[in-house]
Length: 575
Image (cartoon, rainbow, N blue to C red; front, side):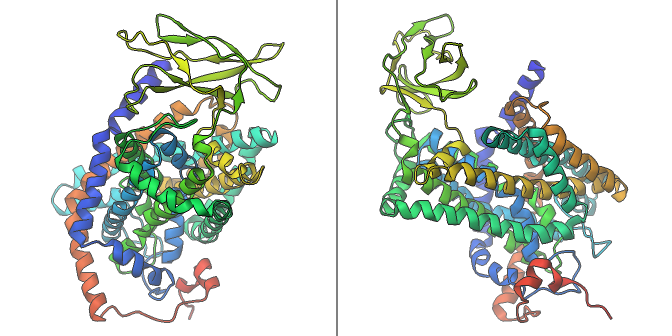
């Protein structure tokens, strides 16, 4: 099993190599320039489309534009917005946020292109239940060029990887996280959480894309509003620091960031790399998943939905992720002083594997076996940060007479004879990812982070599982047709429960499987965008030409908000 995990890790490292990340960003730059900055239309024209002024019940499709965007956003706006940003700042410094903005901006063009292509090639044999996504672009696009078998093979391979990603990242990883979090904070057994999640998700997905669209159209705006409202409350408490934080973000993107407290410093290169990674993982640009949701929209204008899709990276990365970053940076939680002062600091001893710090007795009794702790130490050069500071992680154990931390070994090059020395007068509790964000909220109002992160985790996980169930369902439809849909939905809900039974012990192996699935999806989707992207650009310029000349047509007063959220504005009239 360890060998299999190592193999997955190796494949994952290849699929998500730095050069692959550069290719994703480069693709966004290409389509931005080629389209003449289609981001402008996403920010100006898309809101009008979302308001329903172009909705027509007689167009092919199942849901309106607002529901399609909500369904796609429900799969992207999630734990990555809470924990991913915290991880980027902890590893790359404030400058990572700037590069997340860059990826979000250029990603709008990539998202527009992949969704427009899926709309151009979607299958509308059943006008009320269309099917789309990169698999259909590959199949129908290459079929028109005389290579139907190659197109079918690429589409089938993409769908196989999509099913793996659906079962792991879109389902089990979400359920496992929520189960662990709820048990830790409220002592509710994970399996009970699994049952509740399975019932809630099953009650939605059994109704197909129309019910998914109705639920996400309400759930996504609600969860984003609640998170931004809570974030605004924290930022109001630190309002005077916000201008300086923006200046720090820009400065740190191009200059090294000095170490302070829990932050061990970082180079501009580290900020660039970690900002790219976290933004791409958060908004799913180039992976080909969200075009599947957008392909269900009721419209006869492929470009129109592509323009709407351009708002996804803007909302996910430039709005929600920015709020998280400002909360963490304004509260100073990322550069906090040691959480636990120590009367006597542990001493490092040289071993064959590196430097080993002595087991450290912990003061007080507010510890639980398995708690994570961290030391900041000065030693040899850290190639990641360009400084001489390192983190040494530890695990708390109950020794009967009290608690103590067992430290990991600090690897050191054979040529280095520098003895590590602890910086500061104590150790840190290890706040990783979403936990760091929760502690930022707690620093303003104790307990706020615990409740907010728990509620957000439940809402984000449910919305993610709902949308990803549809992605996997469409992959199955492409492979074997609609006969297996009911069985698939039952298995999908069972996996939610299985993930919370304790069979999944660590996130690392599951995360590697997720990375392999989404990585291969991206390797299939990006070449499709490069090969057929000119068609999306040509269609976009034709659409904009009609929009500018007033020849668009179909414009009518917007529907009521209730009709928009429920989808009644696109239901076919009876009689």
